Length: 287
Length: 115
Image (cartoon, rainbow over all chains, first blue to last red; front, side, top):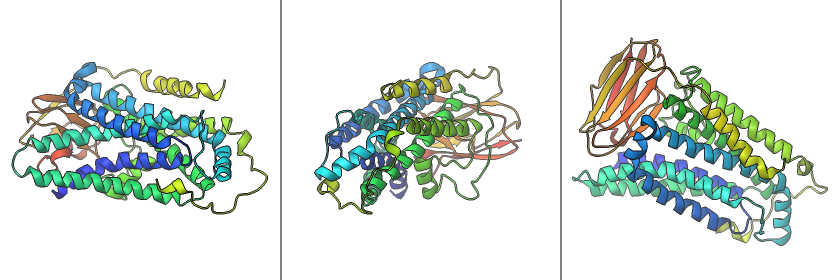
């Protein structure tokens, strides 16, 4: 039961962390909960479908279907995260000011909430399909399965709890700091996902690895360790990165960071009056 | 160019980064591992070091398994009922590379030894 709990927990936290970061990053935007829910539900439906067709997907494209599918899912998420960050960087300040002025969620038509839904959907899809396959394996295993399924359930709850903890932790920040912190988190999240996507394309023999392990910090921290895995999810930590992973990681930071600079020019200058250090927490913060 | 086109620009760049590199050449030495009763067979497999190899993992169990190795930097779900997973591994330095079945970690353990 404990083994099941840990395996499910590890899959769930990856999706939960992504969800909590984008949920925090869209604080104050009217309608975001609906889009986040669409993302989660869509991801769960997708995960079940992907799990059901796992064999078909794996055998597609000369046996590289699963890698290309995973890489595509990751790259789509990277693009949406980048898009979100660029948008936030050019509109975030106005958004924060308006939120403060009206004291409740503001409706921003141009805000790409669909991007947020897609990011969440992709994260749930990828991790969820593994959980479904794993639990299906247990369920069809026969003896003593109820204990294992309970372990799985506790794993889901524990993983979600960690996501909520990060979310509420982030909400403790003042609105301006929150946007700054989440945009860094999203930038690193995107870079890590791009590197992971690149690794799938290496596995599919589509990309050269450019060196199997450029360095090896597994003596310090492995992804086996729960802390290492958290860092893997959050910033793309890999104990033995291949050359191509480094290329994708750095390229993503340059691309998204560059676009943020390019399109955030106007509003990146400080406004006339500095905000007070902490913004009183808004009523919607606990929703 | 307005910010409106950024998603397209990002997507195009990533597609270009991802899919323009040529695939590796074909014939490489192939090694096979099968999974039965959530165990690998063989559990220890020797492969030549410093040369590219191909590893084929066949899952003879009814349920899916995820073949995973941090040391080899590989992870892939292998469908049950005879599903196959193919891995191309770059030239490995001599050493041992543990792998495991993520869904059955208690029993599914193995080591690839590059000599």
